[in-house]
Length: 418
Image (cartoon, rainbow, N blue to C red; front, side, top):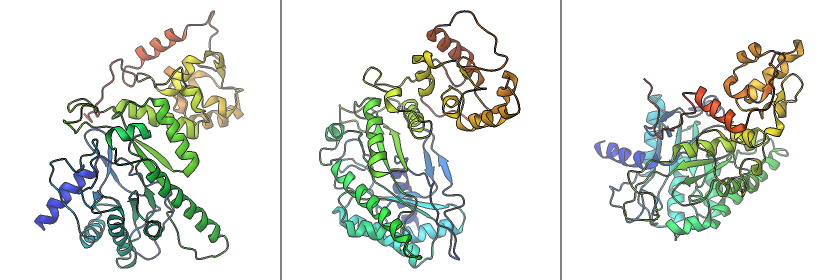
């Protein structure tokens, strides 16, 4: 038991750098077995540097044949090594689940011997959980680049989500820190899994009892800040992967310095780029749910996101010709472009104005960030101001009045609860 605890400590710690642990999207329901992935997904916890971690998030092993400079499990790194057996991972998952410690399994691995050798063991774990232990909870499995399509296809029948890490956003960046790897070995399995998902969906329209294949879809992850890509390059890659492989999510993981020997990487002691990571997630959200085009937020003249303000506010300040927007007459797509107004608040505005023109005191109660939004919208009782304030003045006013969210000196660390 002590040996298992030591393995768990080593392999759970090594897995914390992978942030793509969201469980959203699964439709696997309880059908008399153990667990249900459709109701609540994985419970998450958060590390001290702000990353979310599922309660059983482990590597099968941290042995690895590759020597990626940014990775803590790289071949040349002098760290304790460990490896679970197939039976140990299955036993841990079932025991933790029955004790209500976890609601799912996030399983990844370093690559030992070769891709197929590792993938075959990962596949045996998920197969054993589903068929022998009757486990019906959520499983997120990391695909091993270079593994055979037969193994990936079989594993896909037992998991909810599959993902494969892109590592660095660009091929040039990847070659700088991991010359043994390439992006093609990531694109190939992503395309294969996407094709399989489409084939199984088409088959399910003809055959009632078609098995589920990766029902929660695929995701990928990029490490941010280890190599010198711009935000424009990063979001261009994300956009391409969303379009080409129909990914559910692209995750952005700020690089945590762990390598004292490679001068190309940020040095140990420097802070991880958590604010930049957050801005990339906000941009990702604007592109997918707010009907923004990438070139509106990032373009050759504006290749980096502002760190002191969010991307929507930054876009609004650069495009004053679209404002102010009259919330009593504008359509939904115009209203969600107002900084400080989210999708739910926009819907409330649309519904509420059916009963009369909206004034500022009413809009304040709809959950919008009024101190930001007031500069870009008009309500029924908004006073008329002679002249147009400069956008630089508006920005400074917002920064001064928002003493919590828009600090002029942005902290890179997780906020304290107390």
